[in-house]
Structures are given as structure tokens and as C-alpha cells.
Length: 180
Image 1 (cartoon, helix red, strand yellow):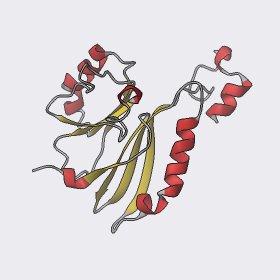
Image 2 (tube, helix red, strand yellow):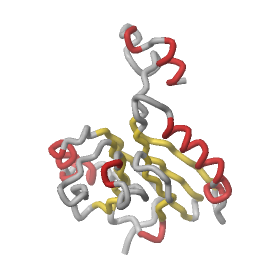
Image 3 (cartoon, one colour):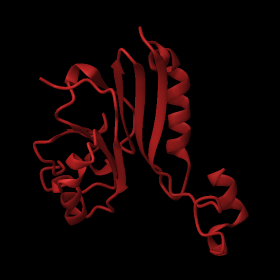
């Protein structure tokens, strides 16, 4: 019998397509010891059968476009097997750069978007904004508690608030404006 999420611990990381890095993360005991519920990976490692590696402790959730556009999958969610599948559902998002689920319980609901944003444009952010506006009712309706959304991931942007402010080559006017 699975657990209903009352406390969520999320591990987010870009693995830069490294099978070694990804295997180290998901096979290490540290995620279980830290009671991680959800792992969000960007630039995941995909094998020769167009799947990713996962242990029995995790249920992999691919972007809803994965089967049609195998080469465009750049995000994945791994949900702890101990979480009951009745407590979450995948949200169909039209890009391999975003994997989304919505968790529900007597505490309310939480939509989690795992995002990979390309360095050359903001199309994914624009798609996310549009998706959240078009699906506002579905994202905000629940019988109990409050509805929340969280965007996690690799946004490939630099800003003096979260990077070394002395690294001025990162902070062109255009880059700072895109980050804001």
C-alpha cells in the first residue's frame, strides 16, 4: 500500500545526459535516507531503447510527447514508488522539455512542472505560461485545501542574484532582461 503525500521532498538536477551521473543519483541511498519523494531531472540519459534508467524505488514519468518525439525528451520526473498512484496524475504538456504531474490530497493540490529551457530562446517559458492560463481551472480546482504550482528545472539563465556578480560576462543587458 502506498503513501499519500503529506510532506514532499524534491531533488532537482541537470545530469547533462550523463548515464553515470544519473545512475549515481538514483541508485544511491541518499535519496531514500533524505526521504526524497520526487526527482526532477533535466537533460537525462536516454538508452538505446529510448528509455531512462530507474531503480525499483522510482516510477519514471516521461513527457507526454516522449513516444512521438523521442529525440526531444529533455525532462523527466521520477516519483517514489511508495507514493500511491491514486495521489497523482500526469498532466499532458505539448513539449519534451516539460514533464508535469498534479498531486492531490486532503491538504489540497500541487502541480509540479519539471522544465528544461533551451539557452537560445524562451519558447518553453511561453508555453508554460500559456498552459497555466488555459488550464487554470484544472490546476486550481480541488475539493480540499489550497492549489499550488511549482516550476522546477534548468532555466539556463544568469542573474547577479543567483550567480557570482563579479562574472560580468554573464550579465549582458539582454541576458539580465531574459532572466528577469
